[in-house]
Length: 108
Image (cartoon, rainbow, N blue to C red; front, side, top):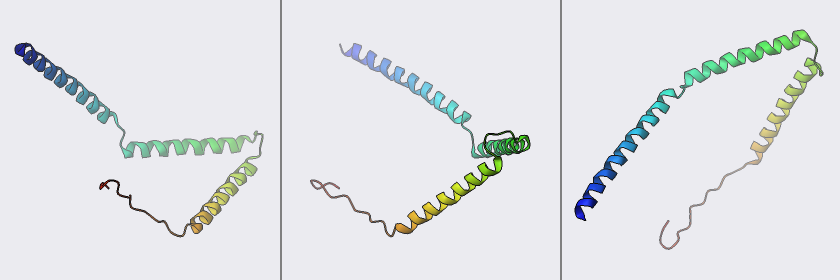
């Protein structure tokens, strides 16, 4: 019986090592494919240019349901209103109190 248990133990260790090596391989491949911050900034700049170009083209066509000037003024007034509201909320916060956890049964 001991020989069988020793043989099974070796098999389980080998199987665990094999699964671990496959897992590490997959994690390494994911790390290689992960984008760095320079790539994301470049892509963000590229898309910002495309959006700006689209806005410019819409302004030249002038066939929209709502006039572009009216739309742009609505968006800018919305941004101003959001900034005012956020400043009012920031003024209302006077202090932030933190409390330590109470000890239970001698543990913290």
